[in-house]
Image 1: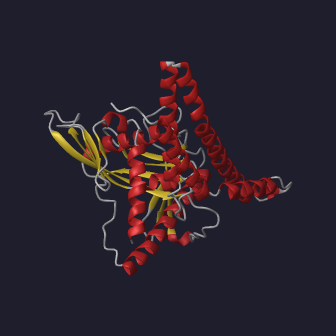
Image 2: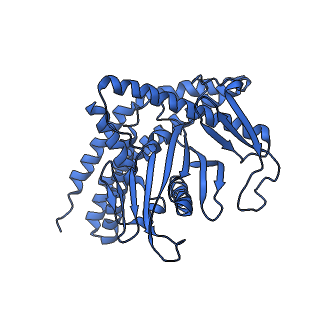
Image 3: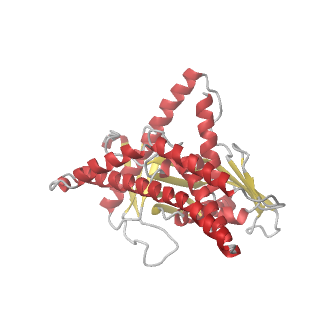
Length: 370
């Protein structure tokens, strides 16, 4: 095994970070932070709650990016010092610490580099993820719940805030559908590459003859609406139904008719919310979800027009974007990027960073070629 060239790796990592700092424009970020701090300090800021929320949210995100860049730059600059100490002392344990820190810094820089590719109009928004079981009956419902768990574990590993808005449980096992909000910087840009059909091949635990089954679930990812998006919905355009929340039981299940389902008549889009304690709150949340989905529909229509002008006849990523095989062999493969791994357990436990990074780079390369 060839000796590791630490100086070359550290120099390359530092250069990559420098390019990231230029792309993100660290001086401008600091100027923005000062302006936002001034805006957040206005005495009557909260007279307009929506604007106040927008200002404080933007300030928090800018400060987080600055902090991340500054801390990462310090870690890169500390690497040569750690390397000199380990070399002078001839300590194998210290050398192992250098290896570990260098690998960690390189991974973090790579993740941040991917974030610089997220420059779409809505990429910095929170994300609304909807998962639906598709073909496969009870097997598909169980698969949909497994996919939901995969994303929740992914969010947990990254300390992303998740708010489950609605879950429709299947009769025998699993779920029919669920919708949850992921609140994190660039959540939509990051997770939008997960949109599409996920296929599972395995020996079904619900088949008494232990036969191999194929099942599908669909993942939809849309950006959360902002007050400036101007998505107006006429009351005449929707149908509102109220019903009793359902679930596996326990004190958390509301036993009153407070859950709300809203159908947008023109498009057929249906959204539900049951996590709030009152019908009014559930309706407000469901309307926000509907606005997000209508916003995404508008974005897709606009993109379709652009693609038509460009002569882009490529298919959507949506059809079987990823395959998960648990039998007769173990493999998860992204059918767009060809990235694959045999560690299916880790993937289903939320370790999907490499798939997401490959998806973002793949999408970006496709945009450049158009």
